[in-house]
Length: 141
Image 1 (spheres, rainbow, N blue to C red):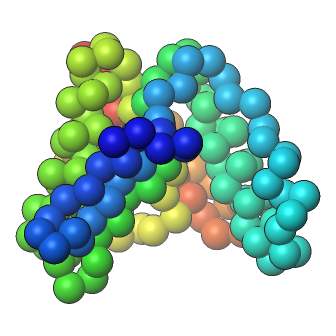
Image 2 (image 1 turned 90 degrees about the horizontal axis):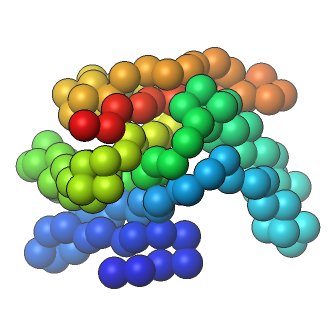
């Protein structure tokens, strides 16, 4: 299914997990139009995410798939739904012979992404002493 920000993938019956991924041809340009209408706290979070993504894209330039969102409802976690979602994104990227990039702020996610072939490309703290984050790359086949 298409979405303005990329491909939306759902899993589970009832729907219990979602991933959003997008194919990026070149270095993405910063989208400042969103920050113009945001509450100051939302704008600060937006700047954090933008900084993390910029650093990751700089570490891995060129066309790629970017995993924007992956999430599974807590009561369905540990049942393979997240793995199914990420494998779907990986399959699309492999079909295109492109790497997959993502950013996480959750230390508990590190082993999950490594299990699926992702490697840390960069890490650090966000601007204004924001949360620590890791930028991952799953190389193209």
